[in-house]
Image: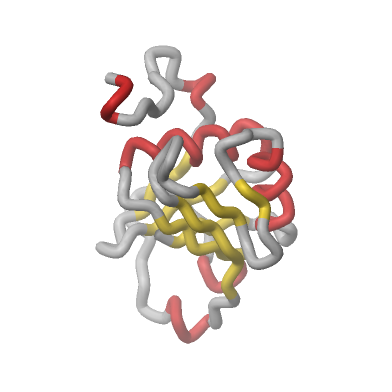
Length: 127
């Protein structure tokens, strides 16, 4: 999944947002979570060129022109976990963020405070 934002310090701000959560490890290259407490997660910055976005359309997400956005890769195999982490990050960032998945579907990510019935991720063994 690609995470995009107009925030020029996107990775630094995502890192700061997740640093206080003990489920994450801040490494030199990115942010990591092993699968002992939550799904395996890797988040790291990438540089994307305008050519990589050429012809791509964001659909109804109201995402600005992607050629001018900062980008991260967010690797995880759990949609529920991606949603929880996205909401956690969205709570602390000053600018909107969007997720773009492998099928080119785009979501505007909002904080959990905008979803009063949202439940945090729980590993299947805890359910």
